[in-house]
Every structure is written in C-alpha cells, then in structure tokens.
Length: 401
Figure 1: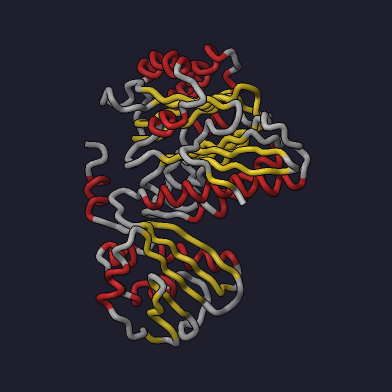
Figure 2 (figure 1 turned 135 degrees about the vertical axis):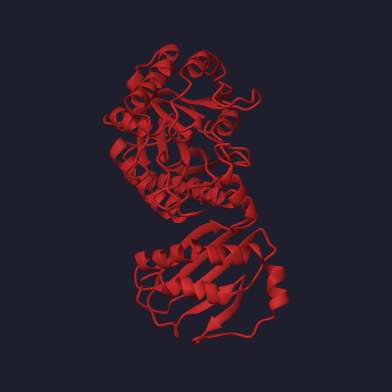
C-alpha cells in the first residue's frame, strides 16, 4: 500500500525542484500565476490530454516535444488559457519553453508548457518573459507548494500530495500537484496536473501507467459537464531512486502510486467545484460491464436535479432513479437498489420508508455517498462530483467581468 506523506507534492521525489511567482497575468500583485517544475536530470515523460476537439496551443506544443518521451521541465501559467489564439498562441507557447530552457541550460524541446484561465485572449508575453528569471531563481526542493498555488484559477485551495512505496527493496516516491474547480467533465476536466516520480520507467510503459490511472480517476469526476480546451496530465520519471526500470514489481507498485495521487487529487477537484459545499461520491455496483457502471454513475453525477437536491439536503430518491433510468443502460428498475448516506431509500421498484429528517441531517456531512446496485452483474465504478449551488451560478455568470 502507498504510504501517504504529509505536506508532499511535486518536489517530494528525489531530484525535482519547483517554484511559483507572480508574473502579472493576474493584476493582483499578491497572486502567484507562473510555475516551474524541474528535474535535475532527463526524465521519461508521458501525457494525457483533453478529448475536446478544440485544444489549446500548449497541447500542440507538448505533443511535439514529447515525441521522444523525454522532458526536463514544465512551465505553467494561470489566468490565461492561451486557447483559440491561432498562430500567435502557438508562437507564445513555444516561446515559453525557450524562456524556461535558456537559463536552465536545456533545449526548448525538453520543456513542456501548460496554461489555464480565460479562453480567447493572447498571453501577456512581456510579463511572462520578465518573470521567468525570477521563477528559475526561486527553484528549490521546497517550492512545490508555491508551484501548486501558482496554477490556481477559481480554486479555493492548492492541491498537492505525495506517497512513498517500495519495489525490489528500493524506496521511491510519487508526488503531484493539480488545479481544477469548474468546467469539469470526464475525458478530462478543466484541470492541469503534474505527477513526478524518482522511479525509473521507460516512456512507453510510463504512458500506459498514466493512461490507466487517468481512466480510473480524473475521468471519473464531473462538476458541471463542461470539458475544457487545456486539460493536461503530465508524468515525469527521473529514476534517481535507483529502482530497476524493467522490474515487474516496480511497474505494479508505480501504477499503484500514480493512481493513488491521481485519485486523491481528483477527489480534491470535485470537492472544490466552484461554489460547492459537498463532495458527492457515487458508487455503482452490480453492472454487467465497467462501462455500464460508469455510464450510470456519470448520469447521476451530471444530473442538476440530484446535485441541487444534495445542496438542499433533500433525500429525493426519485431524482437519483430518474438519472439511472435515462442513462441509456438496459436495466430492470424493480431490481435496482439505492442507498443514500448508507440508508436504503429505494428497492423492489418502490421508495422505502425513511426518517427524512434524520437523512437530511446525515446529508449535512462534507461527503454525501450514493450507492446504486443494478443487480445485473459484478462490475463496479466510482464517480465523484459536487453539489450545485447558487454560488456556482454567480461565479460563472461573472467570470469575465
């Protein structure tokens, strides 16, 4: 089992440094908006991107730079997505890689780039260019927290974590940071995530490890069903722990570690949904296939009626069952069972007698679990979302003003 490390992040694995500074993308001088993550030696690297057909300029640049499966650094900015910005956006994304690479003494194609924020505006490259020396100078093994803070947009808290594992008698670590709070939909979300490890792994299996982890974590969260143009998860492995790169045990343990940090951050993103007051965890079991379980779970998670009912502490089983029914999955409603906060509320085709006041009190908790048993098979899925509040409407109604 991975061992969680307190206060861990992207610099917890050996050989990684990070920093976060104010560049001027945001007007608030106290707000960090430029981050840098750096590996002291070349690292194997892999990425998973948004499946939105409209993709931001940094994704195009990262695809090109990752053709060899290697990277040394990641430069990230918040406040501006550099999306739908045409040829200028591509040039700016490439320039960010050059700017970071030069003082580090590495080639621009060893640098990856990520941006997040407002879509459609060109980057303030003068501000970014002026701040790169400061962010490079600030690099340190203690800079992970500043980097995580610098990639926040509407997030209410920075998101970082790390774990320690062992393979073949060698201890290694996996660390990560992420941002995300809205435009969160499966196949990823409006999110950025950088995962680091001091384990050794070739690029091809590293990509498989990351894709598998993302499919079970970041692709199982939803806040509002909107999918961003910039979603990117990056994984860098520099091998400084001294692990055996071809080890079967290492691959298994590294997979566990990457999935652990991704799940932890995925839940944090869902919990931090704009205006959210509660995390909603939806577990679907008894499905014929994993896909059917996931489809039902996402149908419930994306139901605005379910999400508002949770916000209002209304134990309305009808809304949950309705979302199960229109998921498109073939099922028998008489065999479906539903639990809310551990209490059975629907079974045998009818709602069950419950103490509504007691269940409403249970729904005051920070996490509200919903369990759905389809009784058609043995496959399961777990989906994370949040409640839908009036604050979400206000934040997004005023996003560009």
